[in-house]
Amino acid sequence: MVVLDAMEKNASVRVLQTELNDAPGVTITLAGRIGDVQSATRAAQETAQAMQIAILTHIIPQPSDGTRAAWQAAKDFNPLIEQSSVHKPEEPMNDQASFAVGLIETQGFTAVFEAIDTALKTANVEVLAREKLGGGYITIIIKGDVAAVRAAVDAGKAHVEGLGKLIAAHVIPSPSQGVLALLPK
Image 1 (cartoon, rainbow, N blue to C red):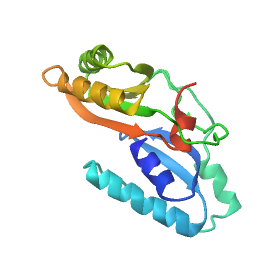
Image 2 (image 1 turned 60 degrees about the vertical axis):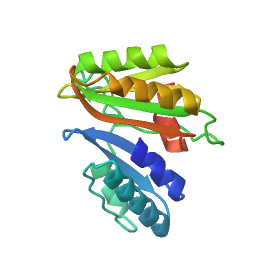
Image 3 (image 1 turned 90 degrees about the vertical axis):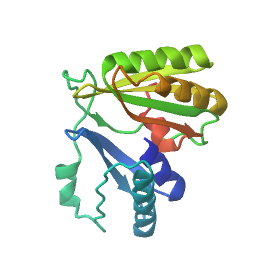
Image 4 (image 1 turned 135 degrees about the vertical axis):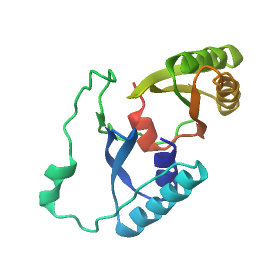
């Protein structure tokens, strides 16, 4: 979500779908003018590098109509992770969000539950979702005003050590349309 937010805030691109893969990771399929897609891709690479995560990007200019069957996956439900692994954004909203989204991702369920309990006790935030990625990776997504989300994420990530491994903790102020479209309703 952090990379997607950076991409959309950098260039005029549209998310066609996201798909969880086995890394654990996510494939984000975008559309837009070639210059915008190139700019968004650079923003993705810079954001991923700053977060010290590996990323693979590739741009296909003017893809053939016949390729759609290869990259467009049907919505599905993965019983192992108890959620869909393919997400197609709903119609975009008109305005940017007036709230922040926070993410705390761990490897270890006990760690993430301790982190979110601490986050909720620290600030006035709301839990939006729990995303399981397999291999014990789990992300909790919270919502609130920027200061509250920052305080909650900072407090929550501090409680992970010893119970599991902190994978990532991040705050997205005023999330982009693609991020909003992927959040649970």
